[in-house]
Amino acid sequence: MAGEYTICAYNKNYLTESELPIGLQNRAFRYGDGFFETMHANGLKTQFIADHYQRIVKAAALLEMQLPDYFTLEFFDKQISGLLSRNKLFQAARVKAVFVRGGAGLYLPDNNTTDIFIEVKYLGKGPYEISHQGLVLGIYNAFPKPKVPYLQIKSLNAQIYILASLYAQSHSFDDVLLVSGDKFLIEATSSNLFAIKGNELFTPSLKLGPVEGIMRKQILKIASGLGFHVNDDAYLLADDLHQMDEIFLSNAVSGIRSVIGFQNRRYFKKKSQLLLENLNCLAFP
Image 1: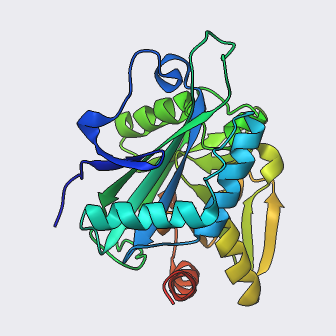
Image 2 (image 1 turned 180 degrees about the vertical axis):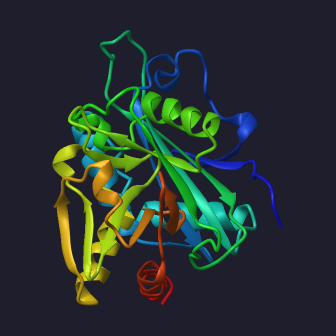
């Protein structure tokens, strides 16, 4: 079973894509005024949904958007389950919820209410898996990622990630790493970055401005439980990755993706695989 599904959720209702009330006045279209949340679901259950919900509440507060009173964790969970069921998605699925400031106005909105759109897509697999081939990474230096709070959430203003993805494609990389103005590594285009040296696990500091990933949180917890020495406040340069034994990327949809190559260095994935096995035990009990 593959393809895209046309039943979506809009606020409290289930609609087909053609019924969605999105016009030229929509503030996502006009100003990129909103944010989104991407999740992994399997068997009508959304993995780590409480963490996702907390991040949604935090993002809405940052952007001064008012979530509806009915939008509780319980409602959100049931709405996603209902949407998956209506689309007959009983295996793994990608869930994307988009939160848009409602109303009209120019830069100054005439209200701060929030419209919520949710879509689901078939993934074709259940538990997370590590690719046998692994990723080849590059560096995107054209535009350093500025450290501003709204770029640490999944903002609808995604221009830097789009340009970085185009750069990766044109240079035959699977993904690229974004950097700060001081050339410290921040994240990949849709994932947090991790590196392993011996029994040490490194991930860029949140002070550098990466998205505070839901999967990042789970991996740090798992690694600590496995006895890794965890450094979640790392300031890594590209040259530092040459000294690492393993590199991997993480996000809520893919779990862990191992990296096989960066510049002229090649990497293993033994401990990444161990982390993935424990992640699957946590995500799919």
